[in-house]
Length: 201
Image 1 (cartoon, rainbow, N blue to C red):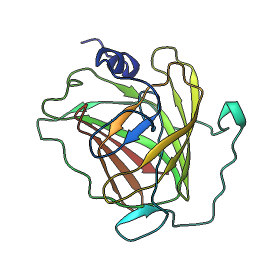
Image 2: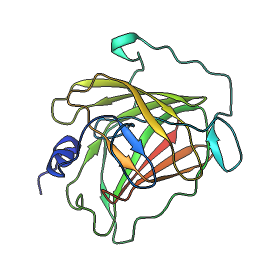
Image 3: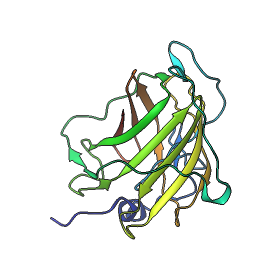
Image 4: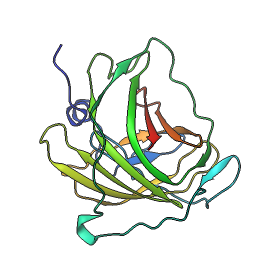
């Protein structure tokens, strides 16, 4: 079966592409980060905390590059979607650790419109105290894009807001919950029935 790019999947789903991942409990799509070639973002809670938040680990600093967003280098390798007959899990929240991440898994669950589409992602992320940078490769054009975002986790809501994007058009996926561990971050979208896992490098 022909592989479907993430950008094409988002277009077929008639999903607006305003930000990168927009994350909240009812999967609205006004801002955020994520996507085929996408990133992360944030809203109102602070950093730290035992059940939700951002930060931890060694000191870090991100450099913004204006309209170019960031200078992050993509060190990730392409990963292809896997399909599952299970129901989409619900995230449990947690503290998002600072560090460099690669997108290492995308899974489509029972009932997902993405089942069988073979979406491919190639993304590197850097998260630092509630802010983040993303670099990815657009599946349709093979061009590299950059995105900046903020995170403000609250409960199981990642609270992501995109602040800069060089991707045109800018693809995003609405995430409804997340699970963070010391070395990973998994984002769940009830709208698309998928999860995306980032693993710290």
